[in-house]
Structures are given as structure tokens and as C-alpha cells.
Image 1: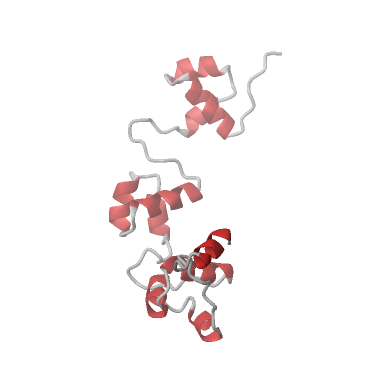
Image 2: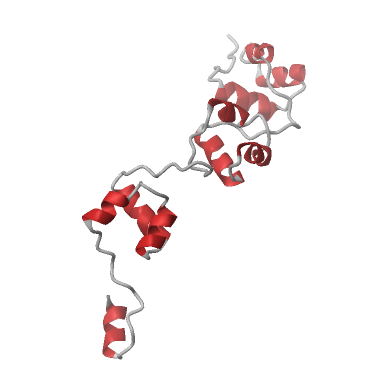
Length: 159
């Protein structure tokens, strides 16, 4: 506010535009079309429209061919099964959208260089020390410990 007052005293234009006052008609149009399209029509920055729509908890308009399309079950199965870039090309979404969805669902990143854990290997966790299991499974100690903790398997304590 001090900057604005100083600029006014010096006769300089106000660089900070006033807040947009939303009319009922404009609020009614939120969520009926994309935020960027409505922003263009209202001559506002797109982030202003998005912020107002989210503040009012109005869902975004889902238009065919955009990343706003809901994820299908088949698309969700691709997450973590392939690199994010490949899933993006298969689903028509951006790599960032794929990564964000995978992380939201707590799906680990695809890494073909690491062997997947089998159920037989999982059953061995906690039956001996992590070091013994690591040697037996030919995996690193940290990989065995991390997997055991992730599966909430208690550490073996000698009696």
C-alpha cells in the first residue's frame, strides 16, 4: 500500500490493478468452460479465473481431448509399469500430469533395472536378519530393510 500511495503522490500510474469484482453472471459461468477460455472472454489472467473457481469449490469443465479427462482404469494400470514418458505418450497426457498422478497414488517410479520383488521373497523377510536375507536374495541390505519396513514386517529379534 505504501508503494501505491508513493506512486500516486509522484504522479506515476498505479502498476497494481484493482481486484476484479465478480458479478453473479460471471460466477455462474465458472466451470462451464475451460478457465483459459473464460479468462479470455472476461479479459482476465487465467490464474484469476482458476483461483476464483477453486475458492468456490466449483469443479473444472471437462472437455474432450484435454488433460482434464478422468483417468480410466486401463490408464491407471500403466502407471509404474512403464516410464512416465511412455505412459504420457500412450495416454495423451503431459509427463508432468502422469508423474503427478503416479505420486498422488503412491505408485513407485518405473525402473526396469531393478528386479521386482516376488511374493516368495516377501515371505522370507523377517525370518532372519536383514543381512542374511540380503545375502540369500542377492540384494543390498538397504533394499531388504526398506522392503521389510514398507511391508510393516517386524525385524527378527533373537530369543
